[in-house]
Length: 535
Image 1 (spheres, rainbow, N blue to C red):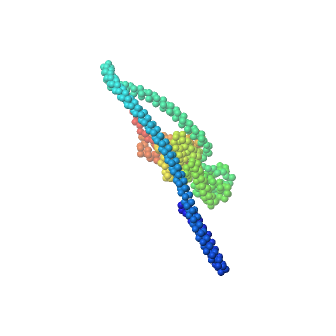
Image 2 (image 1 turned 120 degrees about the vertical axis):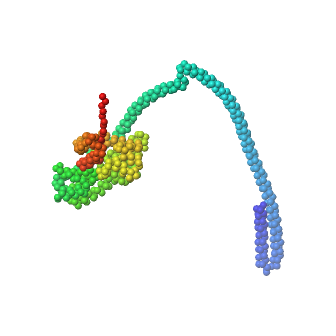
Image 3 (image 1 turned 90 degrees about the vertical axis):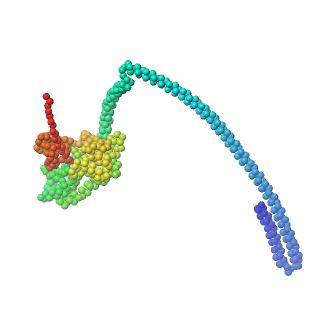
C-alpha cells in the first residue's frame, strides 16, 4: 500500500514540477517582453489559467492512478491469501496422512505385543505343568530311595552276620587294599615317567649344548705369562742391556716386568703375570728396536705414548663388546675391565673370547628354556670380570668380580651369578645356574683350553711337595688343575688347632716359593676314626 502511494505521489510531483517549470518560463517571458507588449499580461493570465488547469488535471490523474493501484493491491493480497490457504491445506493433508500411517504402525505393534503375551502366558502354563510333574517324580524318587536304603540296611546286616565284620571294618579293609594297589600302580608309573623324563631331558640337554657349542666354536691362540720379541740381530741384546745395565734396569723398573735375555738367538722374552703390563712392555720394546734409539729417556717417552694407545684400545674393545650384546647401561669402569680381558688368558683360552662365548651360550640356553635371556647374557658377559684385577689384588676372581659388579650398580641377580659361577656359593636364580653351565661349556669343550703336559705336572708336583714337607702330613692331592690342594694330616700327631696352623703355613710357603696364575685353595683334613671288631 505504501509502495502504491509512493508511486502516486511521484507522478503528481512530476506533473506539478512540469507545471511549475512552465510557469517559471512564462514569468521569464513576461519579464522579458513586459516592455514590448501589453499582450504579455493577457498571455500571463492565460498561462496561469492553463497552469491551474494542468495542475488540476495532474491531481485528477494522480487520484485515478492511486485508485487503480489500490484496487490492484487488494487483488494481489487476495490472491496471496488464496495461495497460502491452499498450501496450508496441502500440508495439513500430508500431516494427517503421516499421523494415520503412524496410527497403523502403532496398532500393528500392539497386536504383535498382544500375540507375544499370549505365547508367553502359554509357555508359563507349560512350565508350571512341567514343574508339577517334576515335583511328583521327585517325590516318587525319594520314596524309591528310602525303600532302597531300607533294603540296603537289611542286606548289610545280613552280610555282617555272615562275615562276622561290621560295615565300617569292611570299608576300612577295602580302602586299605585299594590304597596299596594305587600306590603300587603310582610307583610303577612314576618310575616309568622318571625314566622317560631322564631320557628326554638328557637328549634335550645334549641338543641344547651341542647347538650352543656348534654356533660358537672358535679357534684359540695359546697365550701364557710370557711374550717373545724378535730381534733383528744378537747385537741388539747388548744395546737393550745398555752400559752397566742401565737400559734394562730402567725398562724393568718403569714397566714392572722382567726382561729375560738369554742364549736364545735373536729373541728377548718379557715375563709378567699382569697381562696389560706385558702387552705394553712388548709394544715398547718393539718400538725401541724399530727406532734404534735405546736409552732411559727414550724408554720413558715411548712408554708414555704406548700406554695411552693401549688404554684407548682397552676402552674401545670394552665398548665394542658391550654394544655387540646391546647393553647401554653398563658402568664405564666395568667396560674398561672388559677391555682388559683382551690381554688375559687362562690355560691358552683368551679371557675376552671366553667371556663373549659364555654370554652367547647363556643366552641360547635361557631362550631354549623359555626364560628372558637378557640377565643370562649380562651375567655371562660379566662373570669373569674379576680376572682383570686378580693378579693385582688378593682373592679369587669370583669374589673380586662380584664386589666390583656390586660397587658399580649391578643387580643382586648378576652379582650372585658372578660369585656362584664356580659353585662357591649357592645359586639364587635360574640365570645364575645357566651362567655356570655356559662357563663350563666354554671352558671344557674340546680345544677350548690347553696347557703343556710338562707345565701341568710341574705345578702339581710343586704343590704336593710343598704340602708333604710339613710334619704330620700323610697325603696331599692337587686337584682342579692345581687350583685346589687337599692335605690329609695324621690325627694323632696333629690336633685341630695345629691343623689350622699347618694350613696357614702351607699357604704361606706356596706364596713364597711357587709361581702360578690366579689363586690356590688349601684344605687341610683331619679325621678321627674309632674301630672295633666284633667276634
